[in-house]
Length: 182
Image (tube, rainbow, N blue to C red; front, side, top):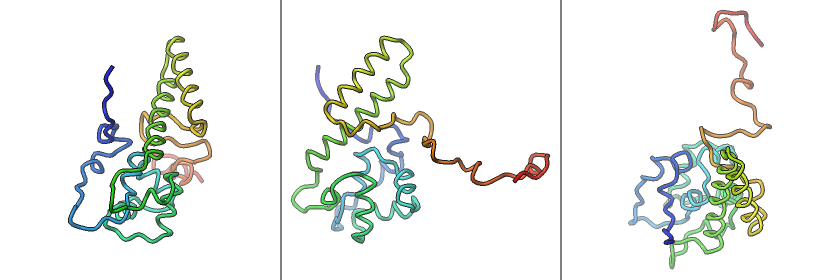
């Protein structure tokens, strides 16, 4: 069986948006950081990063520009969201690839998300057992991945602690032909 190198451009668009995957990189400008590259390899969406950082997607897109001169506090916030050492976010002039440990973790994270998706969608007992075995084998290699959720099927998932917009902002029933609800 032959192996094929992973290309993040082939990820589903809910992981890597089509617009994000096609952004050109200007090679004539000096590059200061690799925030966007690390975010894509870690499988973190801009929406998730914006929510965790308390910022807007527009602001994070500006920060992801490799030529943007980010403050140390901004890099520290990215480091927490992406769960990588700070030095991995900084551009080094000698080489432009991520370190082997960070690449391995990103690959294992994607593999765990896929295994969790298989487990979640398994309908037959045999497939469910195989998916459980795969999840357990990945956890033997990297126990810190125990809380990784499956790939999103439709949109962004919310945890049980997060409230949807409809619950946070009451709607007037008069808008739909009823009494005012508060």
